[in-house]
Length: 468
Picture 1: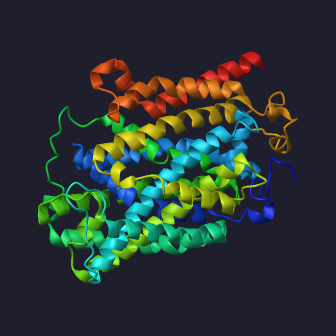
Picture 2 (picture 1 turned 45 degrees about the horizontal axis):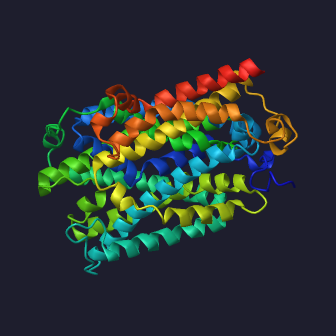
Picture 3 (picture 1 turned 180 degrees about the vertical axis):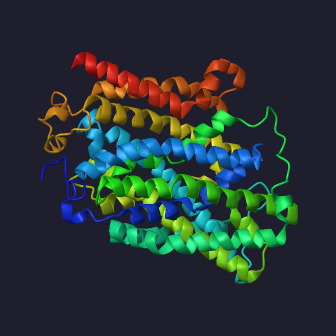
């Protein structure tokens, strides 16, 4: 085995390809039902959207992102290769480390966010049990006891890293129906607490300039732009193309819209019944009775665990393995991702709904849109879906690009797809004053994922054909 491969990066055998459409549907339901999905919808209400606009945009965004999800997933099901190996075709056998590391770092950020949500749920559960743990003091975003719960929930994930991908599949299949039942129970409680006409009749919040529809849509697409890249990490185990397509189509758009509706209901009920709208479900649950709060917080812990291990540990495990295959296995890559996740400070990122929806989701969505554009252009338009799998593991093959292992055209296309959106991102994130950047560039960031995907993909295709 050479220095471009290890057991985890090798193509799966026919015997290993056992996942059915039910497994993929369960995988997605397990990932969809999580606090970030709930918070995404509540953040939209906090940013001035009506509940109808919020749910429609969530559904539309997930129909959009399903397209690259299924298309890129085709390569995994066809050849049994993970995302970093697929990226070698366009970026080069060594150049694939660039998209792999970028995707891996985004996963580390999401891993940290989900650990934070899980830590908040654990903190609330301990208080329901009578521990009397303190929340943040004035001017703080996290208390010492909340940070300790964050670390405890973080440590739980190491078990699944150590046991591997099959343990994650089993977790998703078992957990998915439980989380559906819990979501239905929360909705039933909410409708008993507050009449439906009050929940859905709550007027939209008035915000300066009105709701930012395109920026929100871009952020919502960016929510799963991560998985749209590394979906081959899962589809490489598919029994057939039909299984990965049907399972994803059933498991993603509609469940996302339905669980977002749970977030809308929770946000509205907390505002009406308790006088303060809660972005996070733990804030609502801790105001309910001890039994309901305890069960709800346990479900949040399970929901964040299932999402985190599948969406945010599988990818970086493979991604970091791409950098040094002989030294970094799937297990080692997962441990690296977990450690890097500790360096993120999600309590600051999530301090405002705008920071979550526009700065985080929109920012990394722009990066990953450019990568998706290049992968799609290379695999479907340039190579017509045909790859030389053996050459993906050799420096002297067609994906070695002259022996350097790097395809400079892919790197340049990526940069040109992303850089025009950078000024707008700096304004949205508060690093630059709005009047320091031309309005057109600020607006351009609102379309970041769409722009970077189209520009990077088009430039890559044009330069590749011209030099072919």
